[in-house]
Length: 636
Image (cartoon, rainbow, N blue to C red; front, side):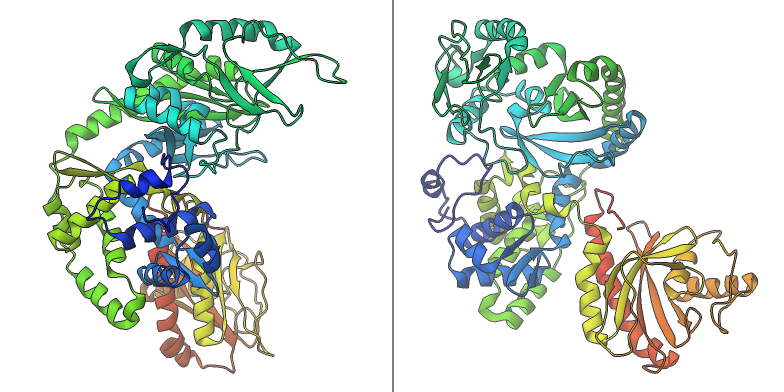
C-alpha cells in the first residue's frame, strides 16, 4: 500500500511496510486510496469530515477531495458541507457479495422463523480469515438487544461461530491467527467488540472449577503453528492489570501460582489469561461436539449457541442463537435450545441441497456498455476531480452477483463493459487488498467486501434514506416536504423539511393525522385491498365524507399514481403526494409537498410540482431498493 495510506484495521495486515512491499506493480493506486477512504468512513460509523479523512488516511487534502467527489458522483457518498457521509447506494458492493453467496436468499427466512419461535436473536455468519462476519441478523426488540450489524467483523476467538470455522483451519490460518493476536493484543482492529484490555478475574468460588479446566487445557491444548505441536504451557504475558498496576504473567507456572490478595479485598482473586487464550481448546471441543458456546466472551451478559450449516461437506455458514444471562445461562441455552437448533440446521442444509439441484448453469454476464458513457460524461463534467480508475475498479465488484459467484477475466470484462486490461488491473488490486480471491483463473468475492460501508448502512431507516432527498426537493420548490407511513387509519409523519415562510405548514415528526382527508394518506390507502373508510368526519366544508365517493377517488389515485387534496384537511392547505414503493412494489410510505392554496393552483401543482416530486421519490426508491435487498429497512 502506498506509504501515505495507513493499513485499515481488522484486515490482518501485520505492518504497513509489509503491505507496501507486497503491492503488485500493476495495482491501481487510485483504487487502493479510494477503498482506504471508504474503510475510514466505515470505521467512523459512516460520517467523517474531509479534514478527518485527510488525517486518518495520510492522503493529501486534494486527493481526498478528488476521491470523495468521484464517490459522490457514483452515489456512494454524499457531501454535506465539510463532511462526507456514506450513502445507501454503496451497499450495492456488499449486495454483490451476498447475492453471489446465495445464503441470505436461501436461509434468511429460516433464521427469521427460528428467532420468532424462540423469541431470541438469531444470526448467520461466515468466516473471514481469522475472524467471523455477519451476513444476517434477526434481532429482538428489547431494552437490551443485540447491536451487531450485517458486515460487522469479530475476532474468531471471542465468538461461538469462531471455533467451528477454526475446525477447518490449516497451519497457515493458525499462523495468521497467532500473528494477529501478537500484533493486536487488545482487539483494537475490531471496532464492533469491546477491547480485551484486562485479564479475566475469578474469585474464590470459581477457583476449583477453573483449576480443573486450566489443567485440562494445559494437557490438551496445542499450537499448530508451522505444523508443530506446542503446548500452551509457554509463557503468555497478558499486560498490566489496571487495578493493581503491575505486569501479570501466566503460563508455565500457572498451576502452581497462588492467588494474589488485593489490598482491602475481602476474598482473593486469581487472574487468568486474557479472552481467547483458550481458543484452540474450544476449537477441539467444537470439532468433537459439533456445536460451540460463547459464554460472555464478547461482553458480560452476552451468551450464544452456534452450529455449522454445511454444504457439500464444508461449513457454508454458522447459525447462532444469542441471548442474555438474564434470560439464559450458557449451559441453559445449550440444554434448552440445542435440539431445536439442530432441527433448524437440518432444514437449512436441506434447503441448500435442494437449491443446488435446482440452480441452472451460470448465465452469461450481460455487458453494461453504459459504464463507458457514464464515466466519460462524468470526466467531462468534473474534469480532473473525477477519478475514472477508481470508479471502474469499484464497478468490477458489482460484476459478481446471483448466478455469477465465480467469473473469469473475460466474464468480468463483459459484465462491466471494461477492456480486459483495465479489468485485469482492477482484479489484481482487489485481490491484493483481500476483496477477491483467485483460483485457476477464476475470481470470487470475499466477505471483506461487506466491510465497505455495509455495517453502518445496514441499520439505516427509510426516514434516514429519504432525508437528503426531502431536503433537496424542498430547496428546489421552496415548499414544505414530508414523509409519512400508514398506521391503521392514520398517517404518521416520519420525515419533514419545512420552509421559513411567514405562511407555511408546521407539522412535527411523529404527528398523526387521519388518513382519508390527506394526500399522503390517500396514496397509501389506495394500495390496500380493503382500505378502512369509517368515521369520515367533515374537517372542512370540502372534506369528502361519503364512503362511495372516497372509494372512487382512491381508485383514481391508484390509477394515476398520485393524490392531490385541496383544503380537505384544513382551509387554505393544498397538498400533492406520491407513494414510495419497496422492491416488491408494495407501498410502504408516501412523500408530499404541502403549501398554502395561494401559492399554486391545483393545475400548477400537477404541472410544476408533481414531476419534481416523482423524480425525488424515484431517487428515494432507488436507494431503498439497494438498502432493502438483503434486510428489512425500518420505516421509522
